[in-house]
Length: 238
Length: 117
Image (cartoon, rainbow over all chains, first blue to last red; front, side):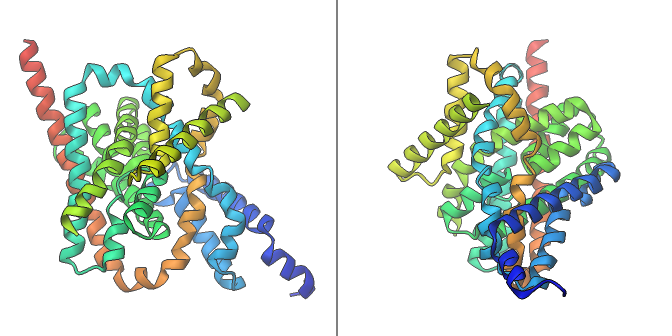
């Protein structure tokens, strides 16, 4: 490379570099996602990670020095979680009107998501830190990271697992519901919001407006419930 | 924007203080979410003041997740050794969760509609 060593060591160590790289990679990934009509596998987070990870590897940059810069973006996960109160508030009337189906489906979906992940992971002999990191996988990212940390999982592993869960839910939901001949958009949307958080919700909005709104409600309610039940099930099952 | 950020960060800070103070295993921002919801229910007029900022935050929700996602580089060993089992757990568990949720929703809806008749 023609860059002088002094300049390169500044670039590699400066938080500004990795903050900028993260923003640019995400911007590019969003453009790719939009051009592919928001296909689940072209999820912008997935694409951005696939761009940044090789850059870190090629430049020999450790995750710690990358995070020095990226932490300014990471910090916003907390306020973003709090902000979810607004869509939840907007949908309070809907939630009140269909309180019984919504709350029962929330408890069923949320509990099955956590318990089946823990039991399956145990049956397949996965190590305990991985099981703990898997347990909050169906809830929205910022909440899942906090839950993972609180129960002794690996937050950075949970981050990857949460994205994969969302992508899987978004890919599976439409063929599965069609196969089962379920035509109620409210039920279809709500289920994917509970099981596959924001990525599932985005998919639901792309398929049907009503499904999207109910998916958003499912995602927001599950953010609250998962953080309450994961510590309980982890205590019982692990 | 400053008012919205102040309100959101205040709720988050209060949430952190409550969870840490009481030793709860719930993330502080989740308690902050509940607190903001309570504030909005008591003072609905605040919603208009914070909505534009919240819209910007939520429209870019995925971006905030990228730094943690890049953590995949810190977990390559676990993932490369166990990826088949991990993917199997994620697929089966996600399908089961959707089935449980959609079946419960439809069953409860049917009972509600029968009662309404």
